[in-house]
Image (cartoon, rainbow, N blue to C red; front, side, top):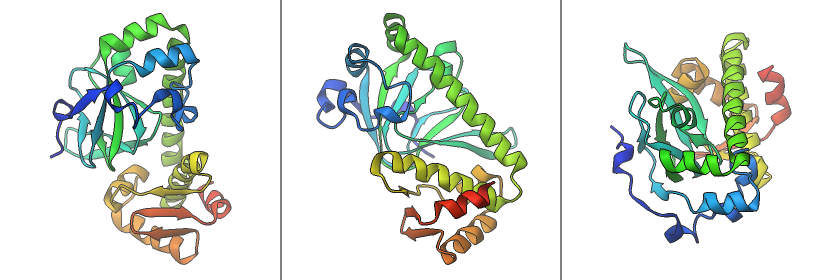
Length: 246
């Protein structure tokens, strides 16, 4: 069972400034919320604390009281929920620039999902009261928070549409791999990313079975659409995956 967020080791933001610096972060442009003007960004940089976690660490759990938000600086975080029957549904893989727990922090409600790191991950942890005070001081940040929530809604809509309307599990898997490849290419220029999920977890994300996902990945490799070395996946033929994902 992953550790809860209460067990995360943390340090003041200033003590990790050489490793994590909002003002010079290469991922800042990837997500709307972090891409603020210099004054707001400097204020944001001083907020909260930074935490560094290994893979498999629970950051927060659904239906627990909101303590604050977590901004993903590096790494990947799996967002999921569990049914009353105990079945886990993976909703999203969050990456650098994503703000976890934003909706819950703004509303004061409990966390809607569970967040677990799937690779070593760096996070910026901001208590709710401190985060809300920051939004009150900076109108731009408030606007960006609203835009980030809107982006979450749109992403959820497209994910549901992909699950409901895609013609096959292969089409859904191709779409997910393309999404991750495009995100990786926005910083590295290459569609190469780390696959921190098991085949069973990937199957949950695309609404299929583990056997089908394993078979489709083998097909993609055989047809030279992707190259897999260990946990690293490289997209070799994005245009062909795009055709499959329609």
